Amino acid sequence: MSSKQRPANSRKRPVTGHKITTVLLREMKARHETIAALTAYDYPTAAILDAAGIELILVGDSAANVVYGHTTTLRIGMPEMLFHTRAVAAAVKSALVVADMPFLSYQVSPAAAVANAGAFLKAGAEAVKVEGGEPMLKTIERIVKLGIPVMGHLGLTPQSVHQLGGYRLQATGAEGHERLLADARGLEAAGCFAIVLEKVPAGIARETSASLKIPTIGIGAGPGCDGQILVLHDILGIFERRFRFARRYAELGGLIADAAKAYRADVRAHRFPGPDNTYTE
Image (cartoon, rainbow, N blue to C red; front, side):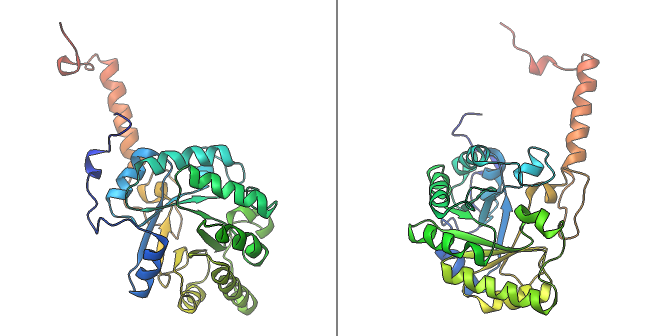
């Protein structure tokens, strides 16, 4: 496939055909239109998701898990994330492309955060995602003031997994509820165009969403958010593991294994290549 080709089932966007922007996402919230978001890490899957009408494609640092096989997102860095961002951005025509800022790419200093956020826009992203609440507000304000859209991320923040004591439900109890609401309002005031709410009680997610003018995108946060996001590999059933917050819409892991076994059997039995797969003079 040439660098300019797109998969056959990704030639036309079936919904509106309009370019999704941060402004349009806010308008969708105002119209009570739910936002569908997924992760992507390469050209062909990004092209397919874009053609399917997915409004927001996140080049997630979850690539550390589903592409590189790590148990946390902490071990992926700027070079890998820029690589994946370039591949995804080359495929997308309509969806908003958001790049995850990896661990230590924005926490060290506002200046480093701005430089790294700018590198993602040069790679083709249209916004970046930053984890954390109150401690990150000044950094987010600096990035936004320089013209780079920022998506926030509250609740379970995977880059803080060791501090949180694992992938546990967050924002529980009255204190947790108040802190989540305060952080969400702070992120909105700092200029975030949207906020991911991960693994928080559905009630507090709904309350937080209702209190904001910007959209919330939930993952394990119930149906009260303004949109939903999942890791692509989880909805496709690539791996055996299952998560309560995800729904499997296909079982591609088994299909890929079956295809590989059938191919191997044909090769071993000299059924492939056949006449249709062979060139003659």
